[in-house]
Amino acid sequence: MRSVLSALIASLVVSGCAATMARMYGTKRETDKFNDNLTWVTMTGGVIDANRLGIVANAAEFNPLVIRSRDNKILATGILFTFENNVTLARARSLSIREGSTATFLLNNGAEKIELRAVKGDSDYSVTAAHNAIYTTYFDRGVFSITPDQLKQIVNASAVEVRVSGATSYIDFPRKPNNHVVEDFLPSWKKFYEREVQPYLGQGLPADSGRRWHRTPVAPEAGRWAS
Image 1 (cartoon, rainbow, N blue to C red):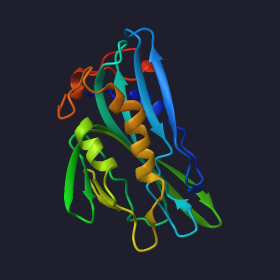
Image 2: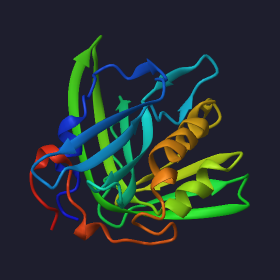
Image 3: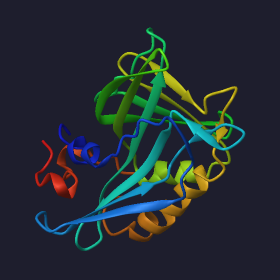
C-alpha cells in the first residue's frame, strides 16, 4: 500500500522536545464522506516505555487502528508506530522503516511471538544547535498490518517486548536497563480492542484473516485509494 501513510504522517505533530510524560488513552476518529463514509479510528497515547519517574525521553508509540465501512464492517486493522530519537552522536541514524520492515512482539516473557510486517514506512530528521552542541532528531513512522486475532493475543498478554527492525537498524522496547513498559500500555490496547474491534467482528473481516492492505483506503483527508 504505497500511500497508506500520506495522511497519517501529515496528521502527526512532531515536537522538538524529546522528553515528555506518557499520555492518557484516547482515540482519533475520522469519517470520509468522499469514500463511502468509511470510518478510520486510531488510538492515541500508546507510549510504550518510560523511566522510573514516568518521563518519556525520545518517545515511541504503538497505536492500533481500524478501518470500518459505513455499515460497521471491519476492512482492515493495523498498528501505527512513531519514534522520535534526539541524539548528539554522529554515528546514530534512523531505523529507515520501509515496506516489509518488521515489528516482533514477544509476549509473556518470550512464550509467544508475533511478527508483523510494515505496509509502508517513512523517515525524516531535523538538526538544531544549542549550548555548543549539534542535535539531530530522527523521526521514524510506519504502519504494520495486524489481524484482529493477533491484536487479541497481544492485549491478553501479561508482558510484552517489541523489536522494530528497519532497513538500517533496529531497536528493542522497553529500552533497558533504564526504561520499563508503561503501566497503561497493554490496558490501553485492550480498551481499544474491546471498544473499536471486538464488537464489530463477524460483520466483516474474519478474526484470523490476513487481509492485504493494498485494497484498503487511505485515511480520509488523503481523498484517494491506496495503490
